[in-house]
Amino acid sequence: MFTRTGAESTVDATPPLLAVGESAGVAMPYGCRRGICFGCLTPLTYGRVRDLRTGEVHERTGQMIQTCVSAAAGPLALDAWPPRSPRDCDPARFHRDDPRKAPR
Image (cartoon, rainbow, N blue to C red):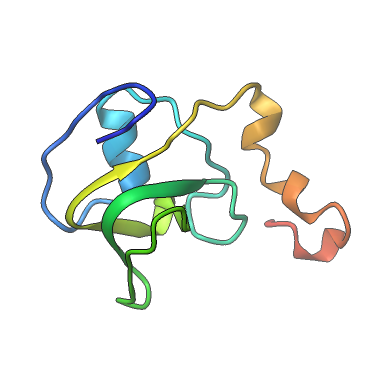
């Protein structure tokens, strides 16, 4: 469930939460879509998510989740908010202090 919009979706444990939200019509923040820029960070309201790269399960309420590389590991809710502007989806904005870290 996406708490700000009330949108709900039932999926298996494979698609990234970013894709699930977008399929449900939820405008979510994103950047690189590969887990590099952290532009997709969204707070976990409740439930469990699994990092698709490491298999690690996260379940701490309020924990910031990378939705582009995390999948559902059971019922969950995210406090997803829409990006305020296209700049909010710019991965480079997270690397202003060190431009060498910006995705290419």
